[in-house]
Image (cartoon, rainbow, N blue to C red):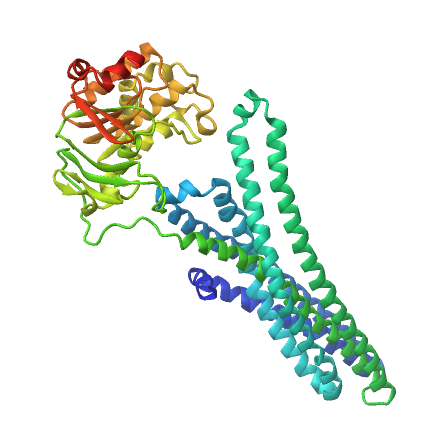
Length: 571
């Protein structure tokens, strides 16, 4: 884990080295004050050497100005390095997140992921800057202080340093407790963030059903769990800091009493005693840094561990030898496909041994009761989920022989739940092809019957859509999603309830455009409103037991089966 963490320093090795050099020089500057103090008390004042006294005062002023410049570099560039390292960690985490399968997001709360990528990495930034610096300075200052103190009195120095093992033992003892409480706190704040994000997303439902009190109680339960975890963490921190503080106070007491006795019996003179007290002050400073380092280490490494847990999630992998998908005719075949959500074998199969052939350029509509697997079938074609059995072929080749990226480039999908990103209308349409020109974006909007509406807006295509497109109606959002598909212009189309949020007039306009787009392309349409698919080349009635019947609209009505019943109820 530490090796992985250290690897993030490699791109900034020069900056890190400069930061450590400045920290070393700054610690060396601190050594001058006790040495000069001893000389002033023992030599310059008794011998009345005025110019030497003034000269050293001026030298100390110069040293402190130099030290101020060093500290500026440490504080600014050291923190910048921490920010850059955190930026790299967040980049890697986000990139990995983009490559995780749908199954991961099905079971993971968005607020928890946000907590890991935002909150946890903040503590990593603090550790990445202060951690190595505090550890390095502590070693330098402890060894330097020890060497100089030994020149004054080896016996007295050994007495003082005898406290160090007890301090390190106590810090190590408390480390595990701090680690446990820190991890629990991170988990609970992740849950609080998840509840908060969920409540914000659902605020309209909450107001519509007047459930604000229920939502508050639900949020408060998570908030109390976080507060309890935080209390336990603070209790561990209080035990740690009070214990280390007590040992530090004993060290100072031992220094004063033993140093006083040594001076009383003439083992050291007054100047050495004063310098000794000052050096012990310097000696305690690295110990305090070590104490802070332990806290930073726990907080930072806890956050890094949680990030690495995310990074350990298995991403989507292309099969060995997978090729780029280039020329696509569009013949699709589902061969004995079996699929269930979840890993438990006791879970019910959504699809069982399903076989369906779709010819090149054919428009096939999937209809039937809810829970029959219509949307699931659409999600399997771009490999959003992996099959439990069987295979899917495109132009006679198993889709697993193609890279996922190239496969998904050839498949356009308008999903049942329309999602818009925060940004402009132009940005959201451009998700269909991020390299598209303004003219291509406008042409896609025209095909989706959206251009007149957009042109009438004060900011036109630069109109801000709001969080999740809240500034637009359901139909307008759906048309933007459809415009994306027009812009992508794929050889295989999946329309999962693509016109479900549109009024009858707009639906007729969109349906005409979709019919034109479907010409010569393989199109898979999921619909509950049967009137939108009556002209499909083939209608497949899918139930939880498989394909009940299939054929053209007129043929299925003539059979007077399930489709005819659905048509009578919803057509």
